[in-house]
Length: 458
View (cartoon, rainbow, N blue to C red):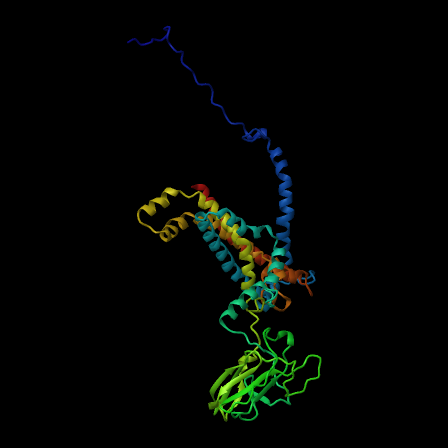
């Protein structure tokens, strides 16, 4: 084994390092990439001008205007801000905004999480995601019009009340004759509580006539038949309850005319000493029969025969208008939450989930102990984004809430519009509301920025 010596044939000449390369000094005006700073500033200048004109200046002017009076000529101090906490309408808007910030993002994110997890396990998951996400393609204005119709109080027009009334009527029978009543010439009188009773007691063998009016013939039961007076029966109490009205005229009161219909299904009670001793239901021709034990009692048509039909819930009334509008918001934004969470779910390490299942964890434990903690960053993004979004909600309330309950559904963005551009506008108060909205958004934005920086350092 030989070793090469200096100057030998196989020697490698030493490499002497050159002088160190020094970075260019700032005097040349060039940056790291070799571009001049003036060029960089020239490129940034349009964006900076737009940022200043569209963001910085409006914010600064709103703060300045919030300290002026209604006319904008005098200094108002903190009076405009004092109104934010003393005016009942604005206080309602602040309260509703808190409800929106807590409820709407939470429900939307929870539903998005549920949908994203479940759609991984069904065959038609993609189609389901498409259907859930589709409302995002609709503008707030269009969604407001849709839900204004959905929440219509008339069951024949409003889907929500149509479903609610259908469920209610399945378990609670509706009254058949809500506006029926006797005339002064009829042998019936008011019995209290909406009921009607006979003026005299009844006895076997004498048919009882119970005539009523106030029912539109078109609203009568479809299988109602022409009224018939039953034959006298010495062992029973018989009678007829019918609509004492002949279409086209010509009928006589207290007389069963050929064209008059029986009140099918009407309930008849025999009352003696304040107690019901017998009951009967009128047939298709209005006839009914009671046992002889009812002799000496008065007959009563209970109030259940005449109560107003159930027309559902006043979804846009003062008590339910805010939850109702939040429901429309969730309908739109749950799909947005689902798509983002599904994207995060697709990136989860499946080996952790499978390892937990191998160790004996059930699906609920895997979801609660592994899936949700791993999705926490994505859930935070969705939640914060929706919180910022609901602070600006305006369109849905303005479109859905009727004028009678708009004050009850009021939020800060809507009140900002009403104070600035409505009747007797006060731009000072409107600017104060805008500043308050900015102050409410800043903590949420700060949290989001800090979370993004924390994620970037990992």
